[in-house]
Amino acid sequence: MPVADFLRFARDEARTVDMRFVIKLLISVCVIAFCAQIGRKLPTLAGLIAVMPLTGLIVLVWLYRENPGNFDLMTEYTKGALWGIVPSVLFFLVAFICFRRHLPFWLVLCASFAVWLIGAFVHQWLLGKPN
Image (tube, rainbow, N blue to C red):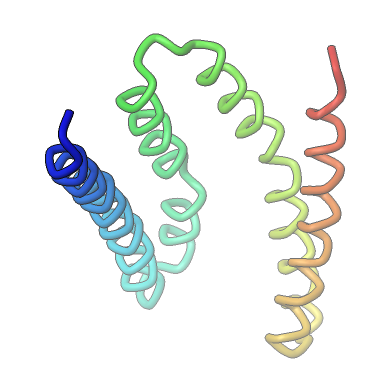
């Protein structure tokens, strides 16, 4: 393959990958913006939509499209998502408790994220252990 053909192929491949990334980014932004808009009028519904498995579903579809038939990858992803629920629940539990106590917004976010981060490290440590 001549160098010019290789460079043209590489450029076209990069453009395809970039376009897929842009589409993924736009879909993600739309979901977040949609939740923020709904949250103004119906905050509990926005909370439900934000934590629903929509993002997990989208990631499953993208992983499968990019790795068809790789069920080991899909199994590991779903295992991580399943056990990843625990740090997320901890995040929202801490936020709920802090908001009920009328703590400042940024303190609530920092405390919630710190607890989530600890949970995420434990999550990765436990799932990273050999079976």
